[in-house]
Amino acid sequence: MTNPNLDRLQPYPFQRLAQLIREIIPPPSKPPLALSIGEPKHATPNFIVETLVSHLHGLATYPTTRGIAGFREAIAAWLTQRFHLPTGAADPERHILPVNGTREALFAIAHCVIDSSRAPLVVMPNPFYQIYEGAALLAGAQPYYINCTAENHFIPDYRAVPQQVWQRCQLLYLCSPGNPTGAVLDLETLAALIELAQRFDFIIAADECYSEIYLDESNPPPGLLQAAIHTGLDDFRRCLVFHSLSKRSNGPGLRSGFVAGDAHLIEQFLRYRTYHGCAMPPATQAASMAAWNDERHVIENRHRYREKFAAVLEILGSEISCSLPKASFYLWPETPIPDTDFAQQLYQRENILTLPGRFLAREAHGTNPGEQRIRLALVAPLEECVEAAWRIKNFVNAL
Image (cartoon, rainbow, N blue to C red; front, top):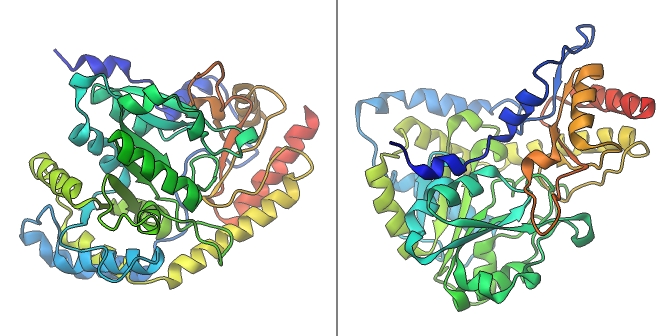
C-alpha cells in the first residue's frame, strides 16, 4: 500500500515537457539551447568552493539539525542588513534554521503545520512552483489557486478571495519575486496579508529565493519579515521566510538555504526535521557561511542578469509581447500560437527548449493563466541568450 494522496500529484513540468517533445528531432545543425530550467549557469564563486573543500575534515562528525552557531549568526546578520531589521530582531538561537535548499523545506513545512482533520486549504499563486501544490496534497489539504494575470500585473488579487477561503486556510504560500512572472509584492500587500494571517489564524510561508536577483540596484524587493517589523509584529508571529543560495550565489548543487521567522514555528519545524534527518553537512555550512557574509559576488551576479535582459529584450521587443520583470531571471512572454505548439515548433525548428506556461499553472476560476505564455530562463551565458533571442525572433517572424 502507498499513500493514496500520491495519486493526486500531477506530473512535474519537466516530465510534461519531455513528453511534449518526445518524438521531435531538432535540427542537428543548430546547437541546443536550454531556456527551460531555472538552473543558474554562472560559476559558483571560487571562495565558496574553496571554503567547502577546506572544511571536508568535518565529515568525521555528525552535524546537528540546528546547525553551528556561526552559520546562524551569519544568516541573522544578513537578514538584518538586507531587510532593515532592528538589531537583535532576528535571533540566531530562536528565529533561524538551516535547510538543505528551499525546495525540501517549502515541501516539508506543510507536513509540519497542516491539520488534515479540519478540511484545510492551502492558498497559492497561479502559476506557481509545483512544490507548493504537491506539499498541500500530500499533507491532506486542498490547494486554492489565485490567478496572476497581466490585468493585475501578475500580483494575486488577495482582496477577491472569499472570506470562507481564509477561514479554512491553514497555509499561504507566497512567491515574491515570482516564478515565473518576476512580479514583486510591495510592503503594503505583505502587511495586509500579515493582518489576514493574524485574523484567520493561518501561516504564511514566503518563498523569497529570487529576492537577490533584481534589476534596480536601488530598489531591492521587500521581504515578509521586513513587513512584519513595519506593522509592529516584532515576534514575526505566523510568518516564515525561505531563502536559498542556489540563485543568489549560483550554488544549486550546494543545497543550502534557511527558514526564518516565528520562534514557535521554528521550534516545531526543528523538532520535525530532527526526526526527518535533515542536518546540513559541516562543510556545506562553512561554505554557506562564507556566501552569506559576502555581497560582492551577488552584485556582480545581478549585473550579469541585467546585461542579458537588456540584450534579449532589445532583440525580441518588437517581435513578441514581453515586458521586463522587476526581479528573477525569467521572461514570461505571450505566444502568438498556443504555448504548447510554440514550444514544440520552436524546438523542432530552432533546437531551443522552453517551458509552456500552462505546465506551471492550473485551470482555476474558469481559466489557466499560463496558457499562451512561455517561460524563458535567462540562465545561460550572455552569448547563448543572445543567440536564443535571434532564433526566437526568426521563428516568430516565420509563423
